[in-house]
Length: 89
Image 1 (spheres, rainbow, N blue to C red):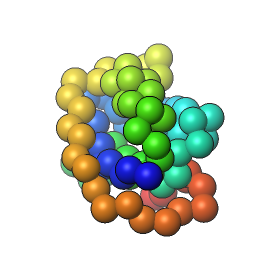
Image 2: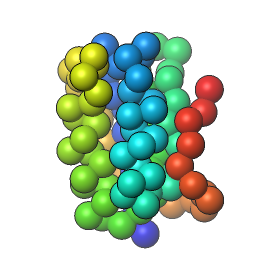
Image 3: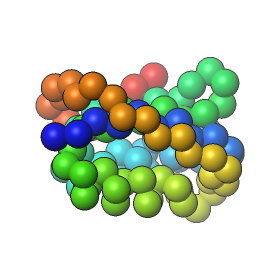
Image 4: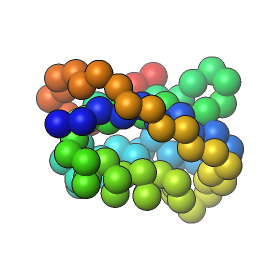
C-alpha cells in the first residue's frame, strides 16, 4: 500500500469536487479523505495500490464539470489505516 497527499488549486470549491473525488476513490477501492482548505484548495489523503492512485490522479486533474483545475501537487505520505474514503469538513 502507498499513500499520497494531493493539493488541488483552481476553481475547486463549491463545484462538487469533494463528492466527485469521493465517488472516484470508492470506485477504485482507495481509502482516506478529501476536504476543502481555508485557502481555497482541495486536499486529498489517499491510500491504495499504485495503479489505483494513478487513476485517481488522472481523474482529479480534470475534476467535475464545473471545476477548473489549475495546479495539482502530489507528495508521498506515510500510509495510515482508514476503513473507507470520506468527505471531511
